[in-house]
Image (tube, rainbow, N blue to C red; front, side):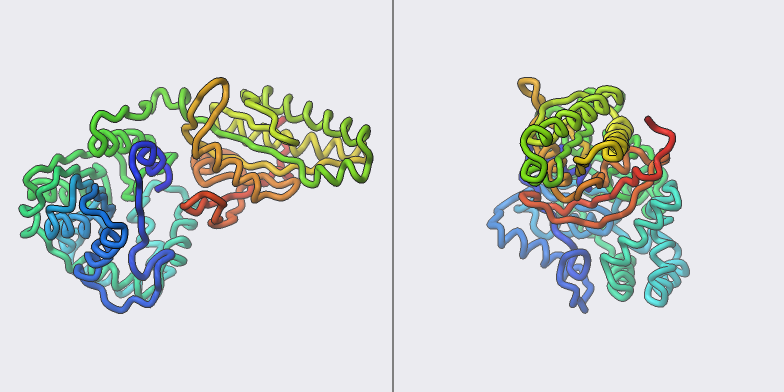
Length: 410
């Protein structure tokens, strides 16, 4: 979701929450009804003192959002419904619905794999395994089964005419989990709704490796924010999407104390040259030197990863020929920073720096967005899980890039 949230937060204050019983919310849920779902929206809006607001719902969250908008038309300014339905029983035949709930409850391991295949059928085996694991960590078998059972039992078609807010309904043309006729039927029942059908099979919100992500973001952004400048079309993404690399020497102060000013300074000069060559030879640009490290930008994620691998390889080679080894930590993130006065600013820069701070010497950490951008390419990542970073509200999923087995790249 972070790939969608970034452009929206440039224009809006964005508030998200985990469904009761899932994710980071309390896990002691026992009642599964539309009323309890609606209560979560009401409680959050009241707590924040929001008289009216834009509301977006995804998947079964879209059904909840539509129900809330029908129940409280005075509080919803604009409504966005992404890959959802007004009639849960219309998603699949009764025999399948009953069997699927039973499978989830009896074997969440098997059920999560079946669900993943429905939600993201074109993903490779590694991506599907990772998402299935994420689902199991986000909810218990009973909560997952009860949530599906609740969804299948919903029917809010009679409520739709009460929705007063201008509504955008987005659906994927070849969605297996929520066939597109659900989106069309939803839009046809809402008085002031527009349906947009976008190519693709993925039920999930926009992902960085989805070729239609920009189309989805542009539709939502243009609808919610009147007069907002849509983000760059997919064909021109290289002009605004940057992959940012931050580096830092681990224990740089200790180098001076241990080896003296002159020797330490010479070692750091050699380090600087290694980094400069690695950046420029892989299509990057050094934006600035910060303390004992560099901030560099690349037009491709693979260029940033290759440069980082080259840095670590060259520093390791240098360590074999000197009595002053240097160990560097590297953080990589991708986004759309603000370009001003030959410098880059914004949340994507802050996130890249924070990711680097989480690494230790000789380690390369990358965000899930960077990993997604190089899906299918020859890089070896290890999942390092979600990290809460200073000053960043949303946890960042990090992956460690294995550079020690690299033999083919310079």
